[in-house]
Length: 385
Ligand SMILES: Cc1ncc(COP(=O)(O)O)c(C=O)c1O
Image (cartoon, rainbow, N blue to C red; front, side, top):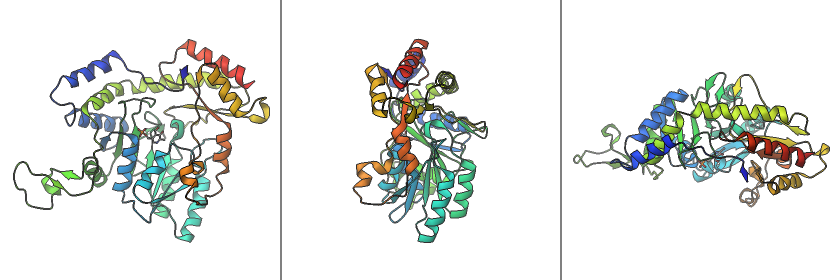
């Protein structure tokens, strides 16, 4: 089966992990801060907090931004469940914004309308999690203007977008957001096995997140409430978690980061070939724009079902039967049983639902061979036409 995504680990990556395994610290050593510094250098953010997953990165972001019971978190209807769960972990309520028909990102016009209504009903969000879906940056400048008007925080869920650029600047510089979150799961741009990071330009938020990832414990005298009893002394000043990343993971991330640009440009090269080779099929191709460079995490197509002889499901199954590990990113969040069982009514999320009826994720990963690519194209033609 040719998978839809796959990690790429080199001998150099393996050697760096072996070196850490033979060293004095396999966790809580120097590699984690080195990795944080390198991600900051790459993105242009000032502070980085490495954690054990993108999900925990989202959770501590929400906590550090003060999200709690009685608050609302909004996110896109088309994203992975973690983009909304982070709000629920904090005791907040979540709501979804429909996607744009072309970009498949949160629709900025629909967001503006929803905010206008929410202001009247007193249900404005405290946090908006914007998701750079497939790696394509959202309309950050416009969303930032809305955040000032309505007073909400912006968390960029950039789990798909490390290596991407918006207005020629790296995703993660937080120019238009409070924090940006990355995931280092194996299918992502670079991997640490499991892992994540939050970057920010706000020191107070960074300090808070550093506490939250390690039990709420500090050894910094200036943050302590009481008198220092001796050199062993530390204080728990928050209720935190053990969300730490190990040095084994961090060194893998550091080693992978050296090849990030190469990985992303390989993804783009394959995506450009797809764009050309699929042009004459009844499908909608991913949105491209000059002011945004996608992280190109996944390559999604939407079927024009009126022009296909088979159903969406039949086409999906046709791929799988012929050894192509297509996937579907994502089931609209409001359709998940967890959200349905709350008996809440959601807004009209028609575009997200339509998207779900048509979307298929084709294989895309940096080590995809020409032979793999040719197989995918031939099966795609065969299944769709
Ligand atoms: C958009 C998005 N947000 C959050 C996450 C969560 O990241 P992790 O798997 O590292 O917890 C993912 C992972 O797939 C994701 O795709």
